[in-house]
Image (tube, rainbow, N blue to C red; front, side, top):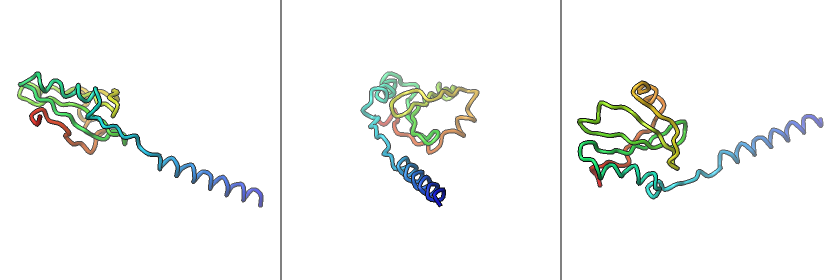
Length: 117
């Protein structure tokens, strides 16, 4: 009987701990006010040929950001650095990992376009 009560108590404790982890609030960061995000926009003002686009996506359940360069001279080159909401590098992709990039990033949306200043 004591073992049953002890097992039941451990089960309830495990449930409480699991529920607390699920309900932990996610830290909200207004990236548009962060220096690293503002710096991503900087090339937009300097370059007329290639236009900067900032993209928001999901990578392994986390929100990430990356830039792409759009324009006739830029479309042939693929290199992406994905950053978390603090501007820290998460992963790099190059022309050898285009397929991996397409599979790993989901819920992709453009959050800034150079031509929308």
